[in-house]
Length: 221
Image 1: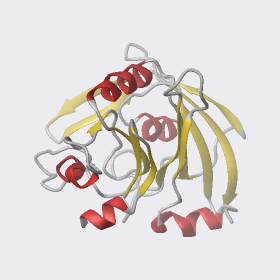
Image 2: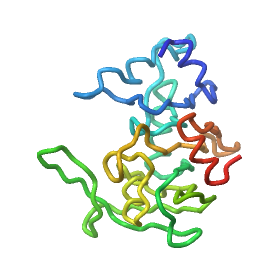
Image 3: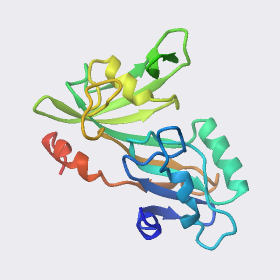
């Protein structure tokens, strides 16, 4: 991705933070299998400041959509506190196989990380860390469901394993469902209450191209 292409994906920019529409397939951090990652590209988003923006939370490599970046050290600290306190409202869209048990509800299943020879994954475990996700069914079609989800905690792979635990894995999820070309999960919207006396800083990401057909199948227009 060129610097111009990355800058074209900015959904919001002010003196404190950026909100980027991260493409699916781009890892946020470096890793043994991720030589190409967003963190190495952030210099293209300095917009004249002395330092590039900093990551204050993360999205899985295969998740698209809203990612918040801090533009200076004070913003890093402030945004870190807001995310840690659960004050940032996050809205996700997912296309899943099957249908939820109710048209809206809450998934309250604690999670823990397990590591084996083939790597690590998250599992549900009453002794794990608390994890809560609210969902609303937005539409269905041909065995698929379009969900709007609001994670109330920020555990790794939370939405993916919560959906799978209810028997409705994300379409294309290679770990908790059936692998496909692309996973169907979008960080649709974030609302950041950066200032106490002003409305939240809000951004909405469009569905990525690979999700459009399945969303239309479930009633999205």
